[in-house]
Image 1 (cartoon, rainbow, N blue to C red):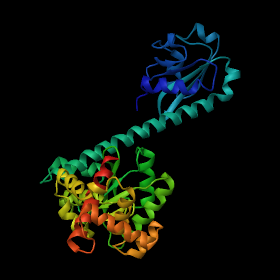
Image 2: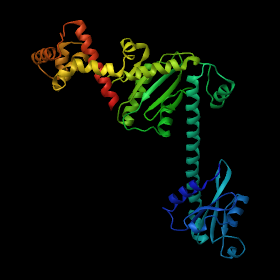
Image 3: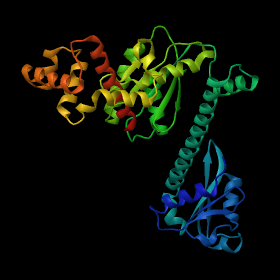
Image 4: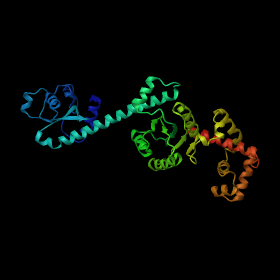
Length: 369
């Protein structure tokens, strides 16, 4: 890894919060690339070059100022990454006074460099994986370069896969730490985790017959809800051969689209009516819900009652209990709904119409959030 000026400058900004002494960072050629004294940037530092060549701390005395180019009294400490010297950090001052915290400063700087390095590696790997998965879904035939990328990324293209699509809580941006945590909790090394847009996570699951997917997802989601403080939703596609990954992805997207706060995890193989509804245009859904529910829009209590009836499968006692109202009040509201919406809640076709209107309305409201 090269110690770039941008990273060196970032390190200086962090370090100078702790020390009042002048600090410099030097590259492998002995040139100062960052420092608290910006006038020294670009100058050659012979003491730092010696520190790089000898792989050890070099103390610079006042006498050394006359024999070494570009130096001031202080100490120069080599910076290591994976046992390789990548630069030097220098502290100006009395060597006796500053040597006590010089080693601590070096360790702190190396940790900053390591963190930046591994973050960059993680970002590179995720970008490569995202590009690979996109091609995986698009390609009809697997070319030799594609198979080579799979080998480099350690992706097994021989096992049955299942796609999961997770919608993140509102205003929650996915960090690398989040992804690491999710993978760690999932306990399945062969699964691939890829950020998918701004608010979704794509998981390509390696299917194992002995694993109960629903139980695992319920436990996973419960933990994340407690950690993140808000609910996540998950759509699960069906198990497919590696060559049909796109099909499982489309199924997971369809399943995710019908999740709700009451049903946050949906498996595509459980969908029936939704398979037909997904092909209806947004305009038709909007017009249909407005045509049925338009007269109820000014009556929040009637809309709430209509939803509650459908959620409790038209069971009047359960609906009244859920709404905390007397059964007679429920009968009154139902009569008002029938009058305003011109429907009969005892007729099957009208109940289906009523259900579809609410389904389309709630789907539109969910997408507008």
